[in-house]
Image (cartoon, rainbow, N blue to C red):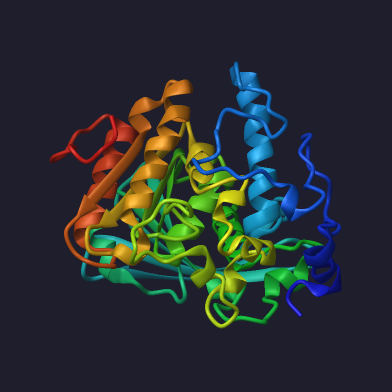
Length: 379
């Protein structure tokens, strides 16, 4: 069973399962009913005990508390960085459709309980240290996006998320089997995989480590936000159409948007999240967080959320609200120009229009270049 008896007991008694103690003062409540009702979005600058954030040092402590809350209620707890990540079985070829090379390899993660994950690296034929976009997929080989990134001078690294955990319910994936003491759900596993890609990139000499971004669409957008919130090595985070459990808001949505109750149904996508999240089905006002927490955790690094007007299921309204709420933290940290929201006409997809908006924003943040229109960006 995915979380084991220890987690099942915690569902009934709110006794936290065993996992290594994190720094910080936050403790789970005695019961769900003891959580206060919060009709508006929870205040980013208020500690759970009511104290207010008044300094950067306070914010760092609040940030640690917010990460604890999100892991406990929504995603489960992620293992720390493993002792090593080694690339094996390298295969290299030139791409005829663009001036680039493709390297495929397997990352062997950890020296004891090893986990393997395949990646593909698409590199422009140019010298120097290059910026990188990381993206997960169910399988490798989504090269339709490669020419645009290569043309713009970016490397693209894909990783096969399902090597770590299948996108299926009631299955413990290889990563969860390797770290059984952690109660992480599927989105957390996939996000952890993106972090391991950065571990590997740090071993190369052709990477601009200050210009690494992570991009995801739909469920991948949820993952990208989580990875970017928890790993500060990502200088840019881009979530496209990420919806409920991603950039969308649990409390604020239109009538046709996916709800917390829908996404956590056992026959749908409950396995993406920790079982505790489903406690709040119909009780969203008891949530001690909302998705503006994830966005605020990215600050002061760069964040862009891209949406589509007709993609109502993904709640573009809620995404705009969480962006506006997170802006308060970006402003507090002196990074007011680093939080962006872009919306286009159309439906649920990651289109060339979305990619151009993301890369325009990346060029602006990484190099000070301004391309095209920016009226949809938060200023």
